[in-house]
Structure formats: C-alpha cells, structure tokens
Amino acid sequence: MRRCLLAVAVTLLAACGADTASVGSPVAGDAITLISSSVLPSTVLDLEVTPEDVADQVATESRAFVDEIGLFGLRAGDLLKATLQVSRFNDDADLDRAAFRNRILREIGQRVPEELRLGADRVHVTTGNRQTIAIWFRGDHMMILSVRSDYDQPRRLLRELLELDPSR
Amino acid sequence: MTRRRLPLALAVLASLLAACGGPDDTAEERLRDALNRTERLARTFVYVEEAGGTTSEVVGLVEDDFRSKARLSIDGSPVFDQVQSDDVLAVRFVDPDLLPAMIEDRAAASDEDGVDPVEALRSRRWVLDLTGAPPLSATDAIERSLGDDQILDALDAFRYVRGAIGGARRVIKFNPDSLDYKPSEDPFPHPEDGVIRYDLERPSLPRASAFGGTNTAPPLPGIIHLRKMSVYVEDGLVIRVLEQIDPAERLSDIIDGAVNYLRDVNASNDAVARVRALKQAPADQASEAVIAGVNLFRERQGEDPIRLRTLRLEFPRLGGVISVELPGDFVAAGLEVLKHRGADVAALEESDDDVAAADR
Image (tube, rainbow over the protein chains, first blue to last red):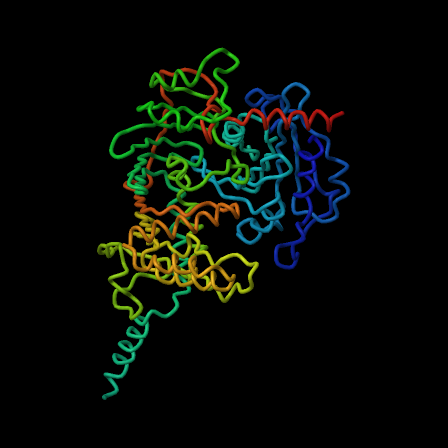
C-alpha cells in the first residue's frame, strides 16, 4: 500500500501526455526543487507528518510542468495512512485553462474524478488501488491527497488539509 | 409582400419551425449546467416519493457535500432523522417501528464497548457514530436499489437526475406549441413565468424483432422507457424536479412485445393468450401484472426491479449560509447495525490484513 500511495507523485510530475504545444513547455526534472516540510504542521488530526524522499523520482523526469514539489506521508505509528503531494506549477502551466486542469485530473486515479464542494472549495475525488484520491488547486499549487480506504476519517482529514495554503 | 414585411415573415416562419419540435441540442447542456450550478450551492430540499400507496417525504438541508441533515416522514408521520458532518453520522428513530426494517441481518447485538445501538435507537435516542458516514468515493458506495432508503435517495438526487438525462432519448425545452406536445400525456404543470421547464423524452420501447431467436432475452422495458421527468429551472438554477414512472401509456405496446416474444420462443398458445388478455384487464391490474412480470426477468438478470413511483423534488432555498449541527445529546455507538450506514468493519479488517501481508 505504501508503494501505491507514494507512486501517485510521479503522475503529477510528468507532462501528462499532454500536447505541449497547446498547454505550455514542460521542464526537465532536475529543474524541480523540493518543497520543505514547513508548509505542513508536524501532525494533522492523529497523523504524524513526515517528508518523503522523492528526489530520485523527480530527477528522472524529463518533462514536467512543476518547478517545486513535496510529498509528505501521514502516519499512524508506522502505518502510512495517507500522503499529500504539494506541487507548484511553473509559469508555462496554463492553470487558468479548464482543458489543462482537466487533462491533469484525468491522469490521476482509476476513473474520471467527481467534483465535490466542501465549504467554498471544490475538490475532485477519484479512486486508486484501495485508496481515495482528492485533488484540489490552490493558487498556482495543486494538492493531491491519497487516503487509504480503511482510514476512518478521510473527510475530516481532507477538510483539515484544505486549510493549508502552501504559498504562505 | 413588401420589403419591410419580409424580415417579419421570416422571423415568424423561424419561430413556427422552432415550434415544430425540432432537435434542441443545447437543452441538455443548459440543463446539465443548471444542475451543476445548483449542486454547488448550500440548499434546503423537499423530496416526496409516492410508491405502492405510500408517501415518503424527506425534508433536509445540505451545507456541502459532506454535511447534511434530513428527516424522513412516511404518510405524514416523522419516523427517522439523520445528520452527517464529515465522517460523523448521527441517527434517531422518531418512530422505532421502522427500526426492524432498517437493521442489517448480520448486525451484532452490541458494539465492543458494550453499548447496544439497537436498544438506544429503539428508545428514540440519537446514536452517533464518529466514523459512520458512507464510503467517500462513489465507486465504494454500498449497493442499493431505488426506494431502499429514501434519505440516501434524496441526498443522491443530483446523480439520479443526471442518470435519467443519460437514459433519455433527448432533453427538450417545454413548448406547448410544439406539434409533438401532447397535453393528454403531460402529467406535470406548465412552468410559471420566468421558469424554464426541460423535459426528458423517453426512448422507444425495445422491439421483440430486435432480439430474435429462441435463446435471447425478452424485449423488456427498462426504467428509461417508462419515465417521464421534467426539470424546472429559474435564473439558471434547478428549483424543482418532477418524475413519473408509469407503464400505463405504453402498456399496450409492452404487451404486444411480450406476445411477439412468446411466439418467437414457441411458447404455448395458452401462455400467449394469458398475456394478451392483459389488454382487456383494468389498467391498474394490467400495469401491476406487467411490471411484476418484467421485474421477475430483471431480478433473474441481476438488475434492479422497476419501481413505479412519482417524485417531487424541490429546493425552497438555494445559496447563502446553511449550517449543519450535530445533536448534543446522544449515545456513541457504531451504526453498522443499520443498513447502508456505518463503517464496514469486515471490509476494513480485510483491507488491514492485505496491507499487513503486503508489508511482509
């Protein structure tokens, strides 16, 4: 399960099979820097937040639309219950275009994400291998929360993380 | 005809042609847009279903997709309350007579803390489950049929309406001047001033000849063939949905299709005659018999039975701030004893086992 949760990170880094002429110019993986764990509190609900090492995965990407990325594990004891990926898009990513966002969303999960409303936020929810995946955009950042299907407070965790503003 | 009158004549001609019921390609898009806009708003709702001689009414409010409150009344008497706030689910039986019908067959008598949720529910107390909300993702949702749980049906109404649109032949804007419009077949009221009504057209019934052969399934009508649905939109927002699922108007064609099918499969003359005789039966009895027969086949094929019903869904308030509060006085216990509620403990334990095995 750990492998499944962490694997999601790679999806985001790639240019999603996009037509680069229409959505901008991806950059090489070695131009991507890692986001510090300071963007997150040390615990969220009952889960401990730990940064995951994705440097090697990032370095191997040859086409990406992000210039910063961070992957964080949320653990109960030793058990990984969820991961949060924080990605900042570079200037070439056309986030204002619905087509660009939709193309990214379609690349994540096993089915077309369903849009949900939580307070003033819109979150796109899909499923992975025994996990629920929630995706939302915050300014030039995108967040991907992957939660194990047996975690018993996925909504509360999501609502808590919606408060996060990585640009601050 | 003078030059000045020509544009007017063309305009009249164009409007007449439009009134002839030509295809309205954008009506479905407009309706879907209205559904999307409405769903994004906090709202109150009233969901009234009449089926099998029973009227079920769900009145509630939706703060957002994870927070809602609803009360189910049956034939005018309140019976069940439910509040969901994120992962927390609280329920109360105002009328405990409904309780046996909602208890899971495999329900344990009490949870691990020794609290008996059934007893607490029987005593009309609120029972609150900290992790009792339904599965987060739609694909994990517990399978149920329409009418099994009216509260969940009401909360899931937008998905239901979208499904109905998907099953319709087409969506058209209501136009009483259309040559296709038949007032005698319209069970719903005309829209008020400023309100647009969108109608879902039923597809044609499947034909016996389209199946052919002796080993094929009969040409059974589905819910999409028997449904009439109209959606009323005001200022770009859905204010009302009306639905009627009734075979009456298509009864004769359904019986003809069944007779043709029976002949195709070389059924006995008696069997053919019995089905054909339904045409002479009183409409109510014929409808009941036909739908019972159709549902028998559907259930054998693993499909949900067709539920004959009328539905009225209204949104008295759309937008603004609506807050859902959990009850203050409650008994904390697991709600998996109730159908379609509570965390599926067995599934979670299985998932844990899989994870442990994978970690090894």
